[in-house]
Image (cartoon, rainbow, N blue to C red; front, side, top):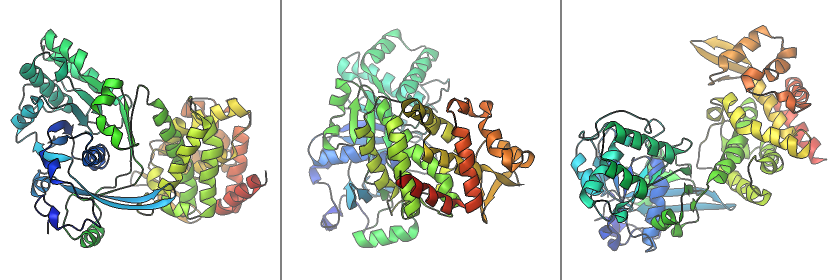
Length: 505
């Protein structure tokens, strides 16, 4: 049995939440660029939940912008798909299956651009959502009267211009446009490109004036792990459990955050925020970026080298190791949380850190530590150095867990082999690929600098770090001591010593 509107009545509702028949007649209020799992597992999840509660009462038309593949999977299932929520929330195991009916249809931009323009003319349309990857928000000087324009900003401008021609300069025709691409200032960058493209196309001043006055481009931050469609074995297992076939089935963790930067009008338009605490509309969303980048990403970065050198493959397996778990908890709660370089209360940071522990411990998400070491050096510079400097400013001391994380980083990056254009590291019999733009730099340091001088040589390189680490007096010396301890005792014993020493303090 394939999941469709017709087969919904045969699904066991004790196992799956299914939509009511009335939802299928709701108007199309959202135009979405992108069919990816993040959109289907986060913004579309909120819309579906709100519709089931009778709050938003609107559905989504998706634009499939790329030429890869077709819309057959969506067409065959009436755009229905299952979201399997798996993981830990507030320390409790969560397992929930939902048939999402948020999407009304998926239209190929290449095959039926006129149908997308018809959606743009619809007075009931209120929102545009996009996730076209960071490559999607790029300026391509092109005619927007093409069929269709090649770029996403071109397609969006074409749709806005079509809406203006159909509905006139009415304020009610304005849209809330929310970008979710993982780049800073995503909405504002999209807005700037759209108006630059409008100038290139010499569109009427009246259209541009109407658009700037009534279309609101919003920055936003999305945060949810959505691994997507499971592998064949897991998919078969889930379909057997649910009792139907679903080629669009996706898995997602319980944690969800969509922070949208906007005013009261944006909040009113995104009324589905009332259905779930994970959707937030505020004039300033920088705090959410800081919490995520410092506590989740920064902790990931500082722990990744330790875990890899310890032979631990996944984040979940790291949480099952008492020494690694203690490191994660201590570095996050005692060093990062009180020193986030932004106006955030310690209580708020600690609450967020609790959600991070739950996410790291999710047994259903296979997140490799080695993958987290990608661009390791850059991540330390961006995510951790501001915390290190702020910690020293606030407490006039050196954070011991952060320094240990730096020592593990320096061991991990000490390159043993260059082969086939790839750099490899080796530690206590563990070999691994170093996937970092600075790998050549560390290879040079490894081959040309005596190991006794290696730490001091690298950490004193102000050009490499973009700052002088001596501004934190004693930091380099402590990292050297940790590096030597790891070299002498091994990473496991060194980490255990650190945990025991600081528990006694």
